[in-house]
Length: 226
Length: 325
Image (cartoon, rainbow over all chains, first blue to last red; front, side):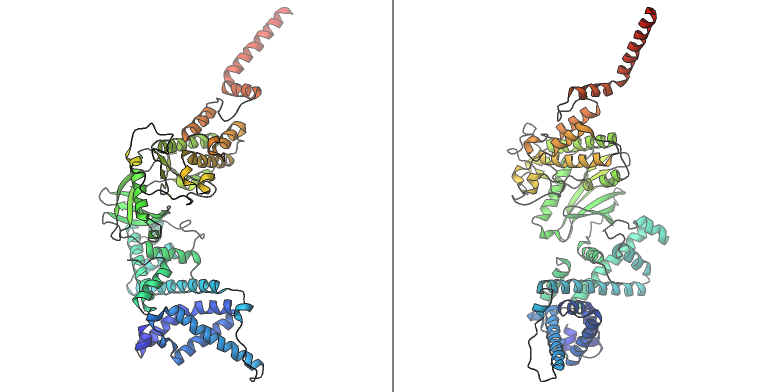
């Protein structure tokens, strides 16, 4: 977040890219549920929103001491969506029609609490996905692609939808990959450790202060890990 | 690939739970989740053997006194020396302050998995007997399990029955434990007031917990709560067997799961006694037999002898008739 506010050039672009990757899906979900847009329309509006944010430099106005970035971004989105809503309505009435206040709360089914929960859930999913992507890249660069593959199979993929049922055991993984069981343990241990690191780094990059970092970790994990 | 809700849940746990075990232990896969801890298969490098490593979940600090509760669970297990109760090898704290303990790695399958593969009525009842004996032992030491269910019962490859997850066990105090008040003081009971469960807090698993547990009336939860859960398990076992259970077994189950504590068996030992009597072909205390039922039972119990006597009598009658012709 500091990079968005204080840094120019590539670092700023990378920071903005991270924000887009972390918030694109939550924004789309929010637009489909709060403004009842179709998925395609929501994708278009999300694209317009981030384009406008970059163009107008909205996110650089974020002050980490005043609240969460997630809340700030949502406020920006609400204002943007309300403007778009007004613009569309004015156009329908010939441009001279008097301003009509946005009434999405009374006309839309999802309550604010539901919207908050959905936005938070999608944000969590995005953060974990970003960490997973980072781990994949790291594993490839570190010649540890099997470690990532095992991690993906053992810890990420659904089998029959339950926690541990249907998963191959370490011994079965070892047999499939033709490595000793201890190597499976080592690979998974490395992948989990690095995944944890990437999750914390991603949250750190998406927050503007230590307090916000800890607050978001609490949202993401239920606790602030050591 | 979009992460499913299950994957999100697992990955969140992975980040929070990853414990840094003492160097002696190498953690492998997660093999279970207990009341408030996660159990890993681990390797003990000092004794060169696989063990089960139970550690407090990172989320568990949100549970009041979570560390104390896990330590207490380890303490209870350590005091309950019985072949049906998993022995504790080691206990301590991780660097982050989370409590852990190490216990024997139990191999086998859960009771529900075991039963799903098919079980005869006799086997089911002998299994119930072993389970009742474990519970009776713990109850006699002043410990109420409070979460008896098929998921907490392991059946080993040679039929060994093990009772797991003592995380929500209650330790009876001398004053409230009328059933065991005569037994000698022991270390478990001496520690009884460490983490009492507050009234109103519901402990157990719906479907298996007794009415007094379900109502949060923890002050009145005693060994009859375990009897109730045993009754539910017995009912499920009997339903899973191909043979009809019959009036006597139904009566045993009915008495075990009576809503009123006073109508139940007073202990797992008395429940076991009735099951044993049924297996031995004797009358059970839970049922007043009709004369016909008694005759049939005696016939079944001494079938060979009765048949021999009948055959003898028939032969004698035939011989008598032969002589008179």
